Image 1 (cartoon, rainbow, N blue to C red):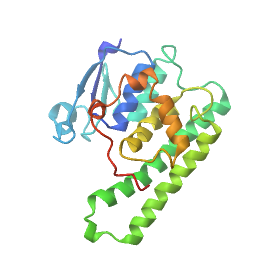
Image 2 (cartoon, rainbow, N blue to C red; image 1 turned 45 degrees about the vertical axis):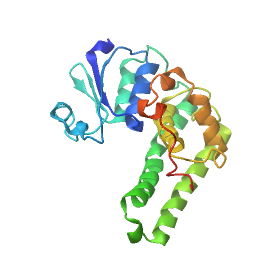
Image 3 (cartoon, rainbow, N blue to C red; image 1 turned 180 degrees about the horizontal axis):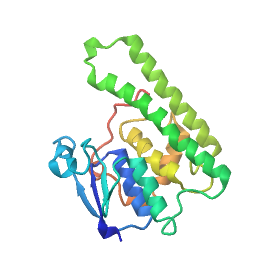
Length: 223
């Protein structure tokens, strides 16, 4: 079944990682895969562009069906293989509602983090405004404190007692933050969630290979 699937992905990319976690959770092994270098612009190759006109990773194909947005691919896999592997959308209405809420809150989290990182890493230091940097940094801190409060109520998983698509979606992004220096002491609930889930087989089996032998960076040490 999985042999009819192809995934183009990049190491360390949270969107790529979440699709790989979903595939593993649904027990879809042996799919065709190709790791590409974003730094070398390999995601703009004709092979990818023919399937994904945006030239982005992940690019995912199942038979004649192409699903390139990572969350769309995760929902697709759960829908098509709902009776296989682990169930990623709970039956309980309350848990299902919370799963959808946390999953789609990802977009707010992501936008605040991107706004901060782009300003910090792409705008030359001499051109940055201290007030703007402070505002963007505070927005990220407020967002992380919100997720700390969420995890104080549901310490193991984001939407109740079970691992769901909310965790598939958010864990790679949280792992990215810690890989780039987020303080575990400053955000103990997030750190505990990270430490707990990083041992989950579907996550451990697809840990970004470029992270395995490289030290953590300190870009986010002051957040």
